[in-house]
Figure 1 (cartoon, rainbow, N blue to C red):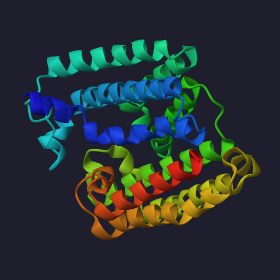
Figure 2: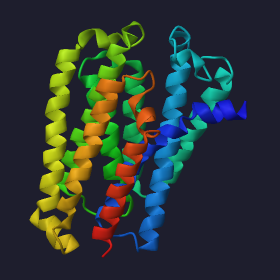
Figure 3: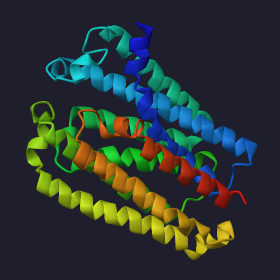
Length: 286
């Protein structure tokens, strides 16, 4: 049962929490041991908070998940992890996340509380409201970046925040399109309000906005002055490839798995991400 319980925590989804680490990298604080430790703690806080949310959602939706061809294999829906254990673990992880966030300061504590609150509202109500459902999920990415900045603490560029917001919307709209094409509307009622054509328009808007925001951040005078170089613009092609590859996986592969799960097992995406990370580190730590 231990393996099933760990699977219920969705550790593969913890990759989303790398957004928490963006401020410590772009603020050039990687050599600051104290800042690095606080950023790592903030990362752990959101791993615990995210797992608490996943457990709670799976617990609430277990009856519906049992009628889904893929989700019925989730540990709680399959009956491998008892509901009582899932509920206790969700409460404990949520409490631990808040306690650890408190050690990082009132601002981080408030942000984690807001993150948990939005997800609870999403589970009960917001997931049924068209467009609002996407905005609610995307807000989690933005909260991660702001919390990572507050944990150090350091100011974060407005361009970086905008890029995060648009990238998050791109990921969530793409996920909705993937779900719609898999005929998931029987379980996710809000999909009846979406269509492939409408989602394609939304994806086009936020894709362009994310790329432009990142490019403007890379060439912004404040960014060039901070890094002492304009080399960050060299990473734009890697960002473009990453987005294009993700679109390819969503539109051409159309696998049954969640696009995020597909990306973390896609060699070209992983190699591209590694190259981008190495280039950013080379530029920011010089």
